[in-house]
Image (cartoon, rainbow, N blue to C red; front, side, top):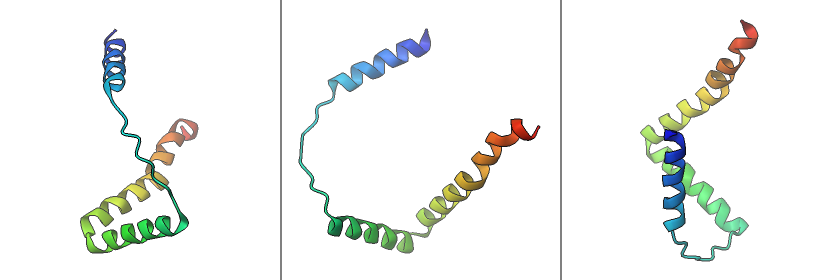
Amino acid sequence: MAAAAGYAVQLLCIAAMRHRGDKVVATREKTWRVIGAGQRHLRDNPPVAGVLAATVVLNFFGFSYAAMLPVIG
């Protein structure tokens, strides 16, 4: 019952949202520019790089191992 109430509230919040409709054109040049900006941000911000590294390690090794525990057991 509580989950249904939560979904109803979420549905009302989503229905109240308005979309501005700005058109954004993605080009290959812009994509590579954004990727490069992200790489520079990682290089200049060690805490963000650490969080990204921990996320990658856990996604590769932690969660896949946890999903296999019932099979191994």
